[in-house]
Image 1: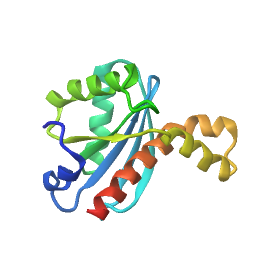
Image 2: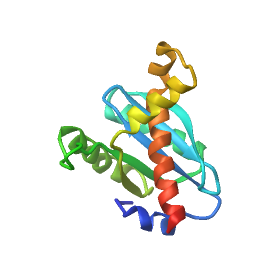
Image 3: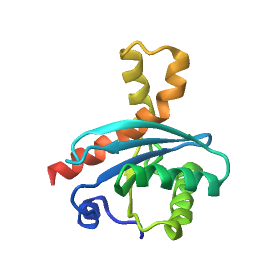
Length: 154
């Protein structure tokens, strides 16, 4: 489909479907999925990045299994509000995904989502090694939960 404003995303989603949150990293893609009521985000793991076609296939397969009808992707904006190379790479990823799927994408400012995810994992006494495995999925859940909270406030 295309890129839509977050506020318009529910209008593109049939009832009984979920929303996905993505944290796009250089080595992994963290994935989180909402519940059917679009109120709670849960981490669903990571996709190890190889090359775009393999990444896209794995992601689209996972999204189909989870009945996803919309995607919120974290946009790594700098603390000063500017957009650097990581934000450009995220936008390029979405542009490359658009021809492969009808799912709408919405961007979400992900500033400090990884920091918040790491603090939460530390608070749960998750070991350093386990945190490294889970951090991207936890960050995706923070991104998605922020978007879900915003949608519920509209």
